[in-house]
Amino acid sequence: MLRTLIDEVRNRRMLAFAALGVLVALALPLLFLKSAPEGAPEANSAAPAAATEAKLPARAARLLATTDAGAPGGRAKGSAQDPFAPPSSYRAAAAAAAGGGEASKSANTSKSSSGGSTSQPAPAVVNSPPSSSSPKPSSSKPNPSPPSSGSRAVDVRYGANKDTKIRRSIPRYKAFYIHGKLVAVFVKYSPSLNKAVFAVAPGLHISGPVKCRVQDGVCKYLDIPAGSHARLTMITADKAVVSRRLDVVRTKARRSSGTTSATAASAHSEPACLVRKLVAMKPGDSLIARDACES
Image (cartoon, rainbow, N blue to C red):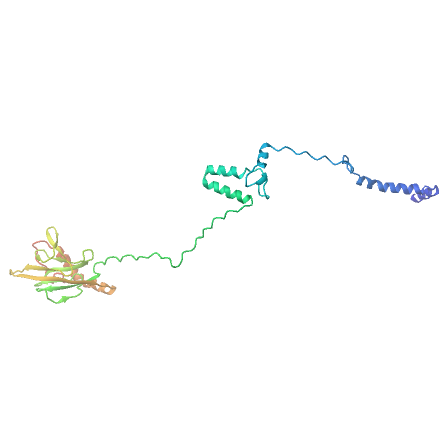
């Protein structure tokens, strides 16, 4: 069919019109694409007239016309100045009314914004570590506790005269006799009194630079410091007067060991019995014999 149409066009000499129709069909879309949108101004249309300068508000005009030294000519130098910010003189006056410190801060800010000298920042405070030469707190050691009973050894003399042999480091519950009768027992060393404590039998006559500790009207204990003495006097069954001098010569520090303590505990069973009997005595009781606690 297309071949028949082409032959007919050629026979009637209409080939030129057919070619023209093809060109028109191809050109129409291009013309529509390149055509300007409706309402667009033409290329040769006249340029718009320049806009007239608008009148500034009165406040803006005053700010631009200010004669402040920080903004000469009413215009700021650089991009940091706000043209609508109040002048520095106004800020300085307001800051001066609020306080001197705020005024100086405002003045420094205005100088920095106008290109002038800037204020130096405050030096930073650096906490340096303490030097090795700094004095260290003294570590004071607590005072040692006072010695307990038995922590000091006691040296004594016991006899008719004051120059008898020294008995060194007498044990606790050491017994002292007159004619086989118990008259005194070493109880302990008292750190609070700083004296040696002796239990004594009632009915004795006590003399010397010491005093008795009286309980229920009876002399029970003698507290004798180092360098002092007491004289113990008794009347025997045959009415004889006999006396002995008990001197505390000195006291000294002594370390106690576990073995010594154990030995002392076993050795003190009989002397402890004598002490109990001596302390329990009442006026008028007979003196305790040496073998009163022997089994």
